[in-house]
Length: 447
Length: 132
Image 1: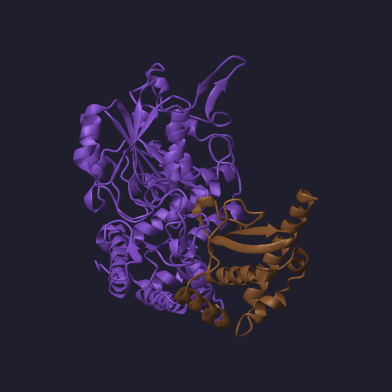
Image 2 (image 1 turned 90 degrees about the vertical axis):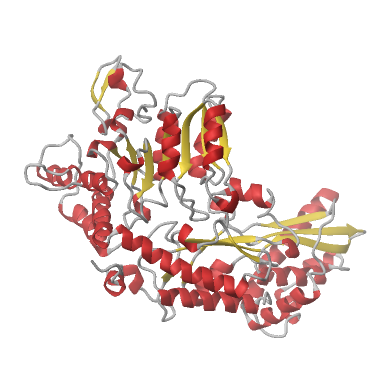
């Protein structure tokens, strides 16, 4: 099998890449936010609305509903794989029942935060670089006095400190570890398998925020032995508004163990239509897993599109995706360090080696008025990157001071930018980015 | 950036931002915040301008900012234009006065000037209402 990505043919799959502004193509380097969508996914969504725009689930028994259900739940008689099965296979889950559709990663993490049966005094351990999605749900529980939140600071070289992690487990009443698998700020991917093994040795459950991992490399939840994994389909070529919570089946079935549940089992947070099999004026009976977690009419076109997205990625091959991103990131990293590494005002965030940052390259600038560079890159060359705090305010406020984004003296200005790459990006795009950035720096008198 | 802005901004980087700073108890505090600055921590277009007024005369204008170079050029010119002016004279400020400070045309500066003049006039109105 050829290890290289067939870029030309892949790029033809993405209609957005054919757009032009001022005669120039888009250079989309914001895939950590959300990815572009291939025509195969758009077609799957389009077909839903055109041909069978009906309810899924077991509500309706008719032609259109069957078409929807076959595409989401599959049809074992005719051997049709549904989206849920495809996603289960994509992350090597034991069963499609372990795949719960959510709105996005944030929603999926909240499902665990609000559905987990904590006892007073329980501690939830996070990293120091959680996205607000993996921080704020826990802070709310802490503010209500339900849990205590603790954080594990990265070790030397900005990598996961397994020794310190072990100490925390030994010395604190940690009930759940909830950590970002790949940082959306630095791109660093933690050694999850080793971390989970240690957590389990101490009887602690683990949830991973896989929003920046699942789209970029092959994930095997069975090999990892992770208890919960949250990720977003819109960051992996799928439609917006669809996320996934993977959970080990025994941890999704709180009720069947007499309400006590398997230790660490979660309850559904939102109840209503579709989540129960029966109700009377005084009580209700929950539906099976995963249906009980998917309240109300669902995003059926999105769920169907999710299957198409996963299939698209599988056809490319996740090993190729990862290798391509690292190749581009290595080039960018080397060029940026060669050009600005000695200036004292340019710094790459996280590990310095591109291979440890996947498709993410974030950098901090300390120059007067170093704001607005993402806007300028866009206006000059249609290059789309992100500037700001990337929803990791907590870490950046700790590193740079709480006022770092507030008005200050121009000589004290500081700003962070993130380039996030995906398999459809090219070396030529990287070169245009480097040249445009250099022109902006020159124009501003930074060089 | 417009070439006239580039030239002016490089001069600021080289010679210093002479109006940068703040007053502890300013007579008027003007503030402009670009939309979207807070969510997810996007930043830019955030300027605070401090005016010290004595006997109806602007004795000093200082600013703090987290903004792009064009905005910084605009606010430096703004502070220069305001210093020493009476409130009456300040309310007569116009976009042309900003552009005269540059060596060439700049539509971007014109837009920034318009925005600064608006918040200045609002600030002076509030100041007069509070001191009358």
